[in-house]
Every structure is written in structure tokens, then in C-alpha cells.
Picture 1 (cartoon, rainbow, N blue to C red):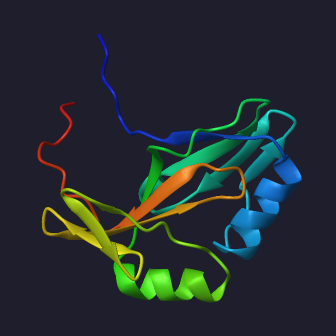
Picture 2 (cartoon, rainbow, N blue to C red):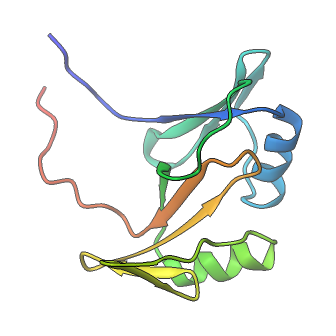
Length: 133
């Protein structure tokens, strides 16, 4: 029986050294595991994500990973000070102001990593149902 426990993202990178530098210098993250198959990053609550070498390039047109933060505005300011550029959107139902959108009662902001992966930061997403044991 399929019994999922958690979810995690795996992001492609054409240049692993460049990706590692981006996550270190811009997001302040250090890989918890690194080998020729890629890098793993551990975050709070037993979550994390991986970056793997790939010759493919992400389209950057859809969100590939979400990172939850307690303060979206503060996180955006901090990351902008480190050179992270946030995406601007102005389409029906989604408009950013200073890189931040309000959607469904939450604040969100999107940026691309060094490899073109589109990442969103948001307030914690409420979980509607608990996993069954």
C-alpha cells in the first residue's frame, strides 16, 4: 500500500559548483550530503531537498520547490541584500508588489536559483489532513 510520509524536491543543475555556491552564498545553506550523484540539504522538521547533476535545463515557468518561512517580507529583504532577484508577476489573479504577492490569505515570493529552478517562499502552508499511520 502506498503510504507517503513526507515530500521533498529534487532540482536539476547543469553546473553543480555554481549551484552549491548559490545555495551557500545566497541562502546560507550547506549540503548535509555530497557525492557524485548530487547534494542533499536538510531543513527544519525533517524536510529537505536535493540538487543533482543534469544536462537538462528547467523551464523556470512553474514552481519547482517551496520553502516556508515565518516572515516573507523579512526573508525577501534579506535575500535581496544577498543579490537574489525576485520575479515580478502581473496577471489576472496574481500581482506582485516589491516581489511579494498575496494569494489565498498568504504572502508568496518567487525567485530562480543559479540553474533556473523557480522557487517560492511562503508562510507555512497549513496541512488540511494528518497522515494516517
